[in-house]
Structure formats: structure tokens, C-alpha cells
Amino acid sequence: MRKLLLASALLLGSAAQAEVRAVFVGIDNYAYGAVQPPALRFADLSGAVGDTRRIRDALARSHRLAVGTMPEGETCQTQGPAALTLINACATKAAILAAWQQQLDASKAGDTLLLYFAGHGSRFINEDGSQASGFNSTLMPHDARRPQATAVTDILDAETRNFINQATSRGVNVVTWFDSCNSGTASRDGNSASRSAPPLPVASPVEKAKDPSVYGNLGAYRVHMGGAADGQDATEVGQVGARAGRFTTALAKALTDTPNASFADLATRVVGEVTRDSGGRQVPHAEGALRATLGGPEVKAATFDVVVDGSRLVMAGGRLTGVTKGSRFALFTTTGEALGGGNGLKARVVQVGLGDAVLAPEAPLPPGWPAVLVAREISHVFDGPKLPLAVADPAALAVVKRLDFVAVDPGGRFRLQPVGGGLQLSGPTGILAPLPPAGDPMFGVRLASALEKVARYEQWQAQISPRPGVILCVRSEADAAGDTDAAWCKRNPPTALELATTSQIKVSVVNTSPAPRHIYVLAIGDKYSVTLVLPGFGAREKAIPQGGTNAIPDEQSLTPDGPGKLRFVAVSSDRPLNASALEQTDTDQIDSHACLSAVAGAFCRGADQARSGGGSQIGEWSIAVVDAQVKP
Image 1 (cartoon, rainbow, N blue to C red):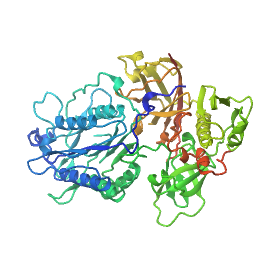
Image 2: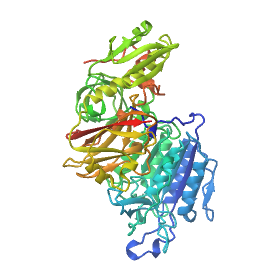
Image 3: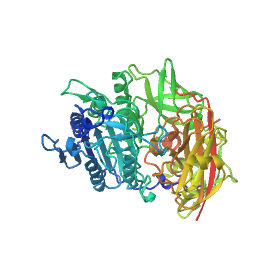
Image 4: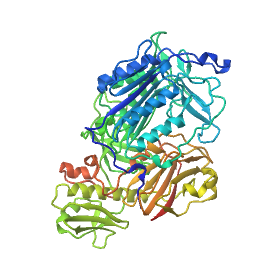
């Protein structure tokens, strides 16, 4: 089974070489808000420009970002060594898009581009069916809603997505912080205390890129934090003349107080603070590679939220995301701590359901710990059959015998044998990993990492037999040209299919269960890679209703990296799942975070051996599987 190019290419530069560039936009004064028809008028703001100054100052202090001077008076545009700032009249649509492009063109693979916007946000009536809500979110530049304009002067979320896709296709990470209304999915409401404007009453199509091959995620990630959920106001507080956005105020303080925090930790703090202070009327949104830090790489080690429920610790991860009874986890107060390699407080899974698990701590929680913790697995119980491994090299046996989930079997489906000056792991799908000689210090780490990936997938696959309630459609883009995903999907039941190495793969899912479901699609490669392809790039999407369809968007490219086999698995559930916990790289790839692995980590630490052996409660769930053969 082949992996996909969507998340496979290694174009990231080293951390020492990576740079952060930024574009800051703040708009208080709007050119055309007062000249709209009465029902469509919107007022100027008071705190957006001040917010731009606050976030710039916070980043200059916390991350030493060279932001330059802030525009004053007549000057409304300035460029520092690492940042370009536009305010008020200089922040037109054309100028904003040009500034984004300028900073992208100055970036290289591995760099990070930060886009900050404070101003009005709105919604745009959507007529092509591409948004389930019927609306596109918009950012409103200084010249938004210009009368008699021949094109839409709001920045639509589709335009923002097109730019982000262009950046990630070059290996450039993109971080968006938007303090505007309706910014839950990447796009402020329109009176003196709120940052929103009335929706645009008519639709105008956004031109899609002509060449879809420019899109894809070549080792780069995206992170989005929005000041308010879709349909909510992003509010300003304080006296007129000294107003400030709730979201930016909380974010700037979090950056200053915790400069090395992960995006997950920033989000947890900002969402909690703004939600509390607004009485629940404004709930910020965060999605994407939240395990990364600004300017740093994304650490793919799986983490789970744990809620302290009286004497119980309830973890948001269960059998559908690979959690097993008896496995041990380390508990931390932040995601950054969990991914930093520390020891944490130990707890064991004593009860596991489909979507959640109960942990028993091995020591009392320290006083003052928060009510929501972060868990990272440190010892995994493989509760399925042992992996049968034929070992043709006697020197490797001592290492193999430390892996309790592996059974030495001369006739096993998996084989470890000498090749050249080292060893080679192979299986039913072919060569899985070249390995150094058994005496090499990295042999145990590399072998354990590869076999753990195989065993985790085999164990999970044994629990996911097809279950009615979801239809999964996988096709070449050319197979249903001019047809809608829903129509094609319903007429073509899931089946095995053939693809070419040049195929642009489209994936769509129809919910056939009677109630709304959350949808996830994973692609499994022939070296046991598992990639979450829907929702893409760490997005958090709402449940879709009965008969509703979710699909990879047109601007997202999904292409095989060569001939072989691919397997696509759709999972639907009545409650959200942490499906990214199932993601893993190829067996021949040693990850930078391998020593955080529950199995390989034992060899890094020189521990005795990895253990093996015999929130959100999921009630309804479904599974669909489609196998594909990729022809040369």
C-alpha cells in the first residue's frame, strides 16, 4: 500500500535555519461602511489598530521577532526586518494580498509565515454548495464593500485558503491569527463594540487556481486561531479610545507569559479566558498543527486531553483511536510539557470505550493541578495476536525478545534478515525498513519503531470491520468530471479501484446514518503510514447531517507517490474523535520524536522493555473501507 504525497515530502529546513516572517493588518477606519444601504451599513472600530500594536510588541518580546516600527499618523505601512505592517487606508484588499505574497516569496521551505488580522469580519452568501453553512467567511479590508466594484472587495475564505495552500506547497508553514467575527474557519462584527458587518447579499465566484499540482502539504503545517466561532461576534472591550479585542488581549498576554508554549497551550489559555470573560458569547477557535511552536517543528507524538472528573481521570481517546486497556500514560499540565520528554505523573488505563478511557493515577495529583490535563502514552499494551517475525540473524534475537508483542516464528509473515552490511525488515507488502547491524546503538530504536507501527495498525485494523452508516467514495478526479461528489458517491457504492500514479485522488463521504456524524478518512500506505486526509490539515469540522457529504476540497491535492496499494478507511461517530492520534510515518522513517514512543523509547532510555500482552462517549459509529491499486 503506497503512501500519499499529501504529507510525505521532507522539505523542511533545520530549526537553526528556519525563520519567521509576518504580515500584521489592523483596520479601525473603513472607507465605505457609512455609504452602504441602511441595512448593510457598518461602523468603524476603535481597537483593531491598537491590537496590532499589542500583538507586535508581544512577539517582539517573546520571540524577538524583528517587527520594525509601528506606522503612525500619515504613515500607514512599514516593513521591519521580519514583518510588514498595514493599517487603515494602507490595508486595502490588493495591498493585503500583495503583502502576503511578498513575505511568502521571501520565505524558504521550513520557514513560518504568520498572518495577523484585526478588523471587521463578515459572511458571504455561498451559492455553489461548497460550504455546508451556505456562507463563506470574509476578512474586510479598508476598501471592503466598495460601491460599483466589479469584483468582491472582501477577502473570502476561499481566497485565504488558496494562498495558504500555495505556501504549504512550497514547504512554508502558515500561522493565521484573525481577530474578527466569523473567524472560526479562517477568516471583527460591525459596531463600536463588535467586529462584524452584515452579510454580502449576492454571491460572486472565486476563481480557483488553474494548476492543482501546486497544492499539497510538502512537509509544512498550518495553524489557525480565530477570535470567534463562525456566527459569533469578536468583541472589543474598554472605553472608547482605549478599546482592545478580547482575543488579541488574551493572546498577547499568553505569548508574553509563556514564550515557548505550543499552539495547543496558547489555545487552551486563550479559549478559556475569552469564553469566561464573554460569558460564553465569544468562543475562539483553534485548529491545525497545535503540537508545534511558533517557528518550531510539529511534534507528531499523540497526546490526549484528560478531564479530572472527581476521583476519575477521563481521557478523550478510546479503541477507535488505538487506546488499549492496561497501557500506561504520563500526565502533564500542558502539551508543551508532554512533548518535552519529561516523566510526568503515571496513570494506567483501567477502562476503555470506543471514544474515551478511564485512567487510574499511580500517585495522587499534586495540589493546584488544572482540571484538564494532557496525556502521552509511555507503555502500550498490544492486546491482539503477536506479530510473527522470522529472524535470520542470531545477533538480533536479543533485541527482538525484548518486544513482548512479537513472536519469533520461522514461518512468520514478517522477516528480519541480513542484507549487505546490515539487516532488512520485510512483510507482505514488501520491504519495510533497512536497518543497521544488530550491534549498532540505533538498531533497537529503529527496529522497535518499525515494528510498533506495524503492530499498532494491525491491532487497530482488527477492530474496524465495516459497519453501516457511511459511504466512502474514492476516485480519480477525471472519473466524475462535472458531477457532484454527493451524486457520484450515492450512485457508486464502495469497491476496489485502480488508480494511476498521475491520478488526482478525490475522496468524499456520505453520512447515511439517521443522525449527524463527525467524519474522518485515513489513508494507509504500503509501509504502514497512516495519514488523516479528511478533515485536512488538522481542521475541526462540525458533524454532517443524514444525507450530507463531506469531501476533500478542490484546492487540496492528493496524489500517489508511486505504484502499489492504498487503503482508505472512513470512520464516522456521533461525537468528535482525536483521529490524528492514529497518524504515523512509514516504517523506514525514524522520527525525530521516536524516543517519545511507548516502544522505541524503551531502547532510547535503556529501560527493561516495552510492555505488551493480552469526555466524549461514542455511542454510534460506522466504518467503510476502499482498497486501491495504483498502476505504474
